[in-house]
Image 1 (cartoon, rainbow, N blue to C red):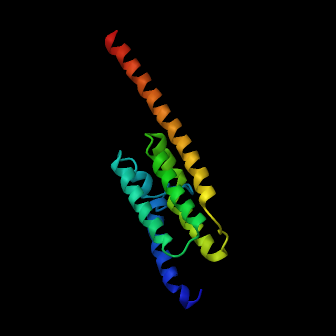
Image 2 (cartoon, rainbow, N blue to C red; image 1 turned 135 degrees about the horizontal axis):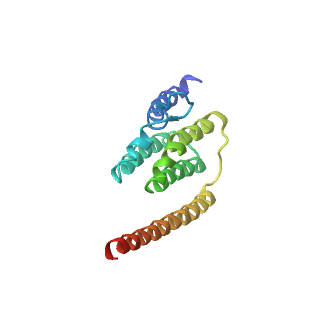
Image 3 (cartoon, one colour; image 1 turned 90 degrees about the vertical axis):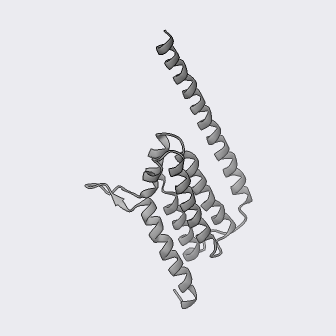
Amino acid sequence: MSAKNEPVNKHLAWVERITHLMDSQFRIPGTDFRFGLDPLIGLVPFLGDAVSLAVSGLLVSSLWRYGASGEVKARLIVNVLLDFTLGAIPVVGSIFDFFFKANERNLKLVKAHFTEGRYHGNSKGFIIRTVLILSTVLAFALYGVLKFSLWLVDVLGNMLGG
C-alpha cells in the first residue's frame, strides 16, 4: 500500500492485536480451535459482558474513523450487539462467545472494505431488518428465560412445599 495508507495500516495493526487477544489468543492443545479473552471475561455475570461490549465498542469506533460505508458500519454494530445480546444469556451465551468472535468478523469486514471495496450503498434497509431480527431473537430469549424461571420456581416450590 502507498504512504498515504500508512496511518490506516498502523491503525489496523493495533486493531488486529486487540482482536487477536479478544478472539483467538489461545489454542486448545491438539486442536485448531482458538479462543480469546472475550469468552473468558464473559463468564463473569454482567460485568464480563459489559467489559467485552466496551472493548468491542472501542474497536468498532476505531474502525469507524477510517471512512467505512454505511452498510459496513451497520454490520459492525450488529455483530457487536448480537455478541452482547446472545452472550448475555446464561450458559448458552458463554458457549456462543467461544464461537461467534464478533471482533474477528468486524476486522474481516473492514479489511474487505478497504482492500476490495465490496461494501457500498445505503444501510437503512439492512438496519431495519437487523433490528427486527434482533428484537425477535431477544423476545424469544426473554420468553425462554421467563418460562425457565417459572418452571424452576414451580419445581423448587414442590420440593420445599411438599
